[in-house]
Length: 475
Image (cartoon, rainbow, N blue to C red):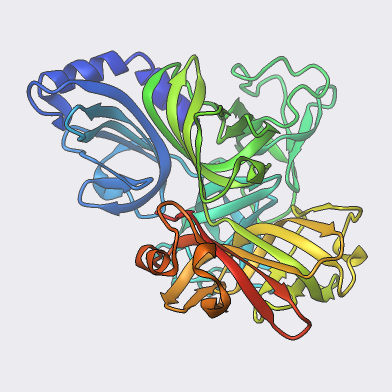
C-alpha cells in the first residue's frame, strides 16, 4: 500500500522536517519554527500543490506516483495524494513527500444506462460533476469509456462496494490489479472475502503480514487494499498477492487533515475516515452540519492533531451534504434507476442504490408510498439529482426542508439543487447562521457553494418558506 510505504519511510521524519524548516529547508524560511503536518485529499490545483483548501510549497519535495519516483509534472487534478511535511510559524506549508494512491485499477465490467457510474472489479464507481476525465479519454466524459477498458480510478471509498471517483484515467493492462474497499463475508477457513461484488481469494503465498490474525471473520469491516489478478473484464475471483489494511503509519502529528468518507462508524464521537481513527469532543467544531449528521458513508474533511495514531478532531466539515424532507410525490422502485421525487421541490430527483440505507419501518423503496413523509440524506450527482445514502420514513407532517450548496443567490431568491427558494416570506429574524441575524447580513454573506438549510411548509400546491440558515461553506 502506497500510504504504508510513505509513512513507514517517513514515520519518524517529523522531527527532521521541523529541523529542516528551522534551518531554512523545505521552504519554511530561515529562523522559522515548524510543526509537523500531514494532509490527505484530492489535488485541486497547482503552482505548488493545492488540496483541502491549503497550498503546499514543493521546491524540496519528492514524489511517488503509481508506486514510482516522479515529479510534480506527474500529478493531475483529481489525484488523491498524501502530503507529509511541515507548517512554519509564518504559515507556510511545505511538502517533504507527496504520494499518489489510486482506489481501484482494473477493466470496466459494466457501464449502466444511467451514465453516472461504471463497475470495475466489482466496485460501483460513481461519477459526478466533480469527476475529472484524463486527456487520454475522448470525449472527456463517460461516453469516452467502453467495456473492457483498463482504467485507474482516483477517489474515495464511500460505501461497501462503492467508490466516488475524482479522476479516471485509461491505462495499459498491468500485471496485477488493485482495489481498496471494506471487507465483508470473510471466511478464514475458505480463505475468501468480498469487497462489494468482488470475491477475493488468498492463500499461503499471499502477503498478509500487516493484517490482523485472520481467524474466523476477523477482517470484516476493515478498509483494506488488495493487489492481485486477473485484470480482465470477466467477473471472477481476484487471486490476491497482497492484502493490507488501509492505515496511517504515523503516530503523531501537530496538524493533520483527512478528506474522505466515514468507512467505520461507532458513534458521532468515534469513527474512521480513510483508515484514520477519529474522535470528537465538546471542543470539535462542525461546519456544514451537526454531529447527528455523521454516519457510515458520509463524506467529510477532518482537521485536528494526531496522537498515538488517533485524530482528535478540531473541525469536521461535511462535503456536499444534502438533506431533503417532505412528502413523496412519486416513487419508482423498479427498473435500473429506482428513484423518488418530493412535493414542493420541483425538478429534484433522488436516486437510490444498493448502498442506500432505509429507516423508519421500511427496508426498501418499494415499501414507500406517495404522500409518505420522508427524510433523505445524500450527495448531489448533478445540478438537481441526489444519490441517497439514507431514506427514512417519518410521521406525517407539512414540513419541507432543503439543505445543500447554493447555486445562485440574488435577494430575495436562493437556488439549491435547481429549486428556487423565494425568501420574501421569511422574517428578518429567521435568517440565521454565523454572524447572520438579518436578511441583509444573509445576502451579504451567502455565495455560490455556501451550504444552506431552508425550512418551510407545504400547503398542497406550494412551499411557504419560513426560515433559512447558513450551515457552512464548501471551500
